[in-house]
Structures are given as C-alpha cells and as structure tokens.
Image (tube, rainbow, N blue to C red; front, side, top):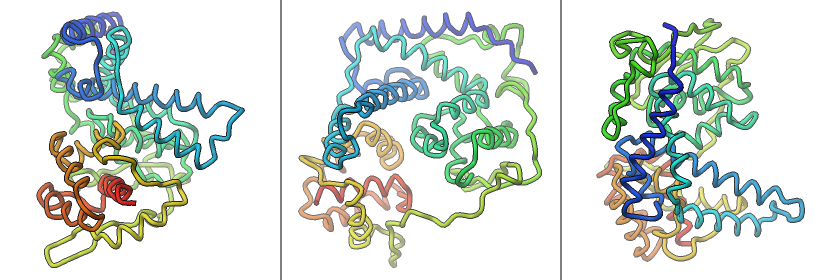
Length: 368
C-alpha cells in the first residue's frame, strides 16, 4: 500500500495533545522533573521520547563545553570533574511549560511515526548517529525505544565492526521484512494516546481506511535487497530472526570483549565479589573514581531509568531500597552478598548482562 499521511492532521493533533497534557500538569506545578516526565502521559513511548530529547540537549551542552579551544578537556582531572558535574545536572531536570510543550509535541509525532511506519522511523533515527558509531548510538539510545524496538535492538553487536551506514539500513529493512507480521499494530499502540486524546488513524492516513485490518498495518510495503546471505539476531525471548546483508559486508566473528561478572555455584550463578574486584580494578586508567556521598544520590538519570526498568521490575521504590541497603553495607563484599541474597534470584537477574555489570560497577565505586 502507499501511505497518504495527513501531515496537517498530525501537527494539529500533536499540538492539541500537548496542550491538554500541559494544562493538566502545570495547573498544579510550575516545573516538571525527570521522574515526573516518566509518568507524564499514559504513553510510555511519548514519555521516553521526551527524556531522549532532554538527553540530546544535555549532550549538546557538554559538546559546547568541550568545543572550547582554550582548555584541555582530555586532561583526566578535567574529565572527572566534568563527568561529575554532568551527572549531577542530569539528576536536576527542571522544565517549565513553555519549554516542555514543544518537546512534547515532537515526542507525540515521533511516537505516531514509530507506531505507523517503524521502518522509516528507525532508518531515519540511525542517520543521526555519528559516522562509524552507529552501533554505539543504538546502545546509547535503546532504552528510549519502547515501540517496535525489535527492528534495531537486535542489531547491537551483531553486525560486526566497520559496516557502513547503508549496510545498517539494509539490515533494518531485512529485519522489518522478517518481523513485520509480529509487530504490534498501530491501533493497539496508539490506543495509549487515546487515553488523553483520541487519535484518528483513518484521517491520519488520508483516504486509507481499516488500516488495522490489513496485513500491512505497520506502514508502507518495502522489498529487501540483496538477500544472498544471512546472519542471526537473538531476540529477548530467545528466538532467532534472520537478517540479510550483502556478502562483502558480512562480518567475521569477533571475540567477546566484556568479562562476565558471575561464577557458578551449587545454587546456580551468583555475583562473585573477588572476581568483580579484579575486573573493575583494571578500569582505573579510564578515569574511574570513588563515589562521593551516598550511592542513592550518585546515579545519573539515565542509569536510574535503566536500572529501574531492567533490574527492578520497573519499581523505582525497590531501586531506592536496594541503593539504601548498599549504602548501609560495611564493605563491598557485604554489599555483593546482600545483592545476591535479596535481588539476583528474586528478580531473576541475568548477571552476565551489561545492566548488571554497570550496576555492580557503581556499587564497587561506592567502596573505593
């Protein structure tokens, strides 16, 4: 099918949606914080796109500082101080209505596109990545993608090193062809917007009707190119989908770079304090330093979101309880024992995951 998007309707809808949300929230408050943004609307994707934009603005501010020709931002002391400053700043989000309204409008439009045409959205999104750093860009931004994210999440560390932009675009296209029948329908995704303001899919698509009843309700039809070779993408549920790349871009297997943080025991896998120490101690040359003050106050906003979602079942109170318990532990070894006893098994942690590794790195820094 050929998409006939009604851009005028989309823009008006986003403005009206933003006004309704802002009227309701700012009738009681002058500012909104980061934690409040996460629950601002019934649509998780809209909320996280707002946070994503704030993170981009945060990076732009950091880039301006580093762009000064008069100071050495590569100096380790400057790097540490700047990192500490930006982490503190990221936990002090404070946005007035006049500034939030436009960001919210853009977030609504982006959410609608990722629901109705995820292929175009994610291909356009990857075009924002710095040259040669698409894989890193996906890693950094994956936590903000809540709808149809399977089109890009599976590409992380699966496409090898040195692939160009076009190869990634073809990978997303092939992934779309493989997964399109299993993607959530626009009607189901956009129903969360309807809790605030009904979104009319038929008007959005112009003359198109019954979009949700067709096989192609994920957007326009595309054909994959050069399907001669495939490589596998591991999905969250353990199933594998096939992604096809040109032969000349197919990567050679690369050895794993990250050390695992687990050891086996009679009761299954658990975190090992001695092994963790040996891993993290070698990272001092990268600028790691001890945390000043309480662990509960040290996490950056992005870390809080990631740990809450990936490790603590979306329960921010449980994360706060865990951080407080770690702060009260007398040593790193005691903190690791506590985490094993209370959280690893109970919450079903994949203790070889990057999220667990980053969380334990923060715990290690607490006891430096």
